[in-house]
Length: 277
Ligand code: X90
Image 1 (cartoon, rainbow, N blue to C red):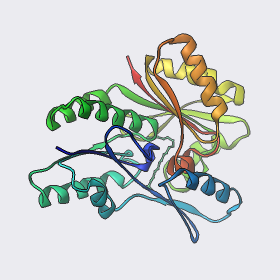
Image 2: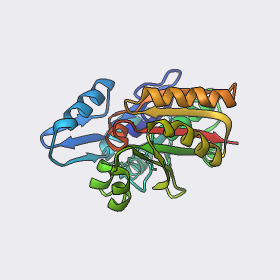
Image 3: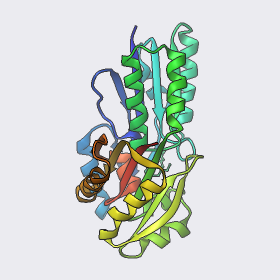
Image 4: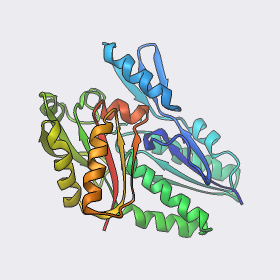
């Protein structure tokens, strides 16, 4: 039996070993330029382009057809999307899943609304892979992932919310408060899958200690943790080191944001997906 995992590019994962996997790209649109979130080179190209680009920039989620192509001919498909509260990706995937099911009644498919973005989506996908490899049957697997999802969270620190505000994903007043030099917004994905501001860190040096405190307040106690950063290797590395001092054997890894998360989290932004106790 062929199992496949499909995730949109807000999960910052182009390839995944050990299982059949497909990344379904979102797109970033700036004038005549279109950046397809399908490889790492595009990320740098996009960030550098946007630095001098003065026009409006927006994003587009995958269409139903793109999801259909990604599902391919697998007997069972597990699909993970960015939060349906901020993107149409989940709806497109769910529509594709209905088509898939109608065309192939013998196959099984489930679409998970991550209610999140970036590294929390990655955790869900890693969990799905683990369960697929254990040979857990479809319905049971879906149930287990839903249970797991109740224990995972997303925290972030952002230096700019310009693109989020310009595209109506956060209120402008929230974005303005962060525009002031040296202020970083700390926040989390709410239960409804929206962006919830929780505090501020003043100055670069405060980001890591404030984030550490915030993660513990949110219930981090040494579980699996994934960091995705946009050109902020330094803060990501420091956060990992600080966490490992307190949680010696924690499974922590660092990755880079793809084009979609880089566009919204912007340079210096850091996303942290983690398991609570
Ligand atoms: O469909 C589309 O065009 C995509 C729209 C996505 C908008 C939000 C992306 C957020 C990316 C930024 C910080 C984390 C916020 C998470 C809240 C759930 C990451």
